[in-house]
Image: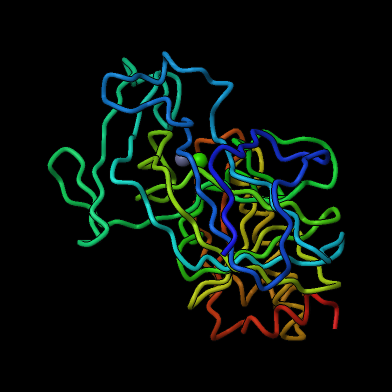
Length: 304
Ligand code: CA
Ligand code: ZN
């Protein structure tokens, strides 16, 4: 298995990224990731207000995929996420959903126990639910800080990006250029205080390439659901973008009119909040695979 070390960090997804590794579709790759503070916060005495914000949200990579070109879809199957023993979570004045109420910067450690499948915060036991916060490919044009989510992926902070999920990205330039980082040991939908349980991790993925296919946003396919992940300035705009993409996909796959597809979405699709604290907000549109089988969706995205 090929390994991408945690010292190969990027801080922006851009058109001029240089690959640290080249792989073939079908290969397994282990990404060693840093936490979102690049390891600058190690104890409850290390405060967010004292760290260097030039080094926030590092993503490990990028990896070039041989044969991947603009107009393809890259599937990233998340085979496993192994998290570090200690995670950290923070509040910062001016951040999160209650920016004016946080009086001072606070850091808390969250201990993980992979054997038990739990985390502990303030003596309270929580489930261990490892997920990948930042994952994306080269954007095709421009440069996006890794802390910002957009159509190429980035800081989507979406709970469905976990073990057993395949995340599909529209490839926007040769090689795709996959990078990922910012894993969380656990995070609630919304990420309300501005951080999850931020943790270094080892993420094993397997890649798959579909030639000649397009999706306007990243799509996560879980064991049970198709999840379209859209980001925009407001939650309403992100909700509209995710809902529109799902309506169009349903319309194509099931041969409905736009109006009927929208009614079906209203009956069967959930809108869920991913995060409301990053520079753009992220909302996901979720449809059961029973209604929209992935093979059908993939065929529709391939235009057949
Ligand atoms: Ca994040
Ligand atoms: Zn994070």
